[in-house]
Image 1 (tube, one colour):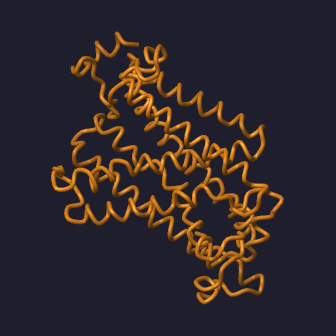
Image 2 (cartoon, rainbow, N blue to C red):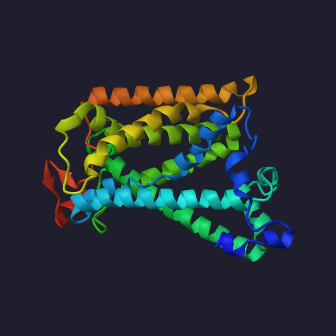
Image 3 (tube, rainbow, N blue to C red):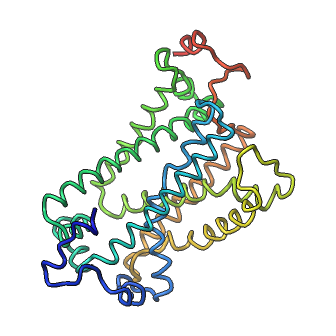
Length: 319
């Protein structure tokens, strides 16, 4: 839609920015060397590639899960990655003024970028579609989070609160209490916007780091701990599993320090970096305490009680 509707030519500009500019010029948006700045561009990908683990957490709620679930993970991440890469290319080839988009009074660089190259009505239509897509992705993440919360609650990881969050609703046969629990936590976190950019930014950064690491732990175990003892299911990556897993782990190791870097250098930003490090340390310490106390937790989504699958009547009595 953007390449077809762009009005760059009406502004006396070529329809697309020359490839020599797109691929060779660096925008000096940080105080870091060009190599580090290039790595920092992957941060946007890490932020947006979220929710594709949802099929795993919902695997026991769908039929033929041992095939459908891994296939869905690969398809959603693959399609998301390809379409995201295409969108990045579209922005690079059509943006008029990067500085103006970042410094716009709108406070939304993407909206300011669209206004640079599109008619107003087209811009509003694309922004509306973007809001719908963002809401849908949020719902997908919420569904996955509720299933993880339910699994941990079933193992008693939340103490007395587990008795509430592990209940299955008698009508929907789903962990509605776990959904509301995550909703309340998410709404409470938005209060941090009143605490300033520092607090909210640190929370969002540690969220990206935690999710990034969580996605990679199973891959790391499969590649470096299990090795040839791994028994693939009926649908797997086959021989490509090991090289893809190794590349994924290497990328995580490379990007974790980048995720903790501020956008510019200077002693005035040390506070934010320290906050992120402290939050990450507290999270690791909390996880270690839970593992030691509980032994191990099941993180798969299953409506089981005492190793027995709940039928409709049993699920209703839990609510």
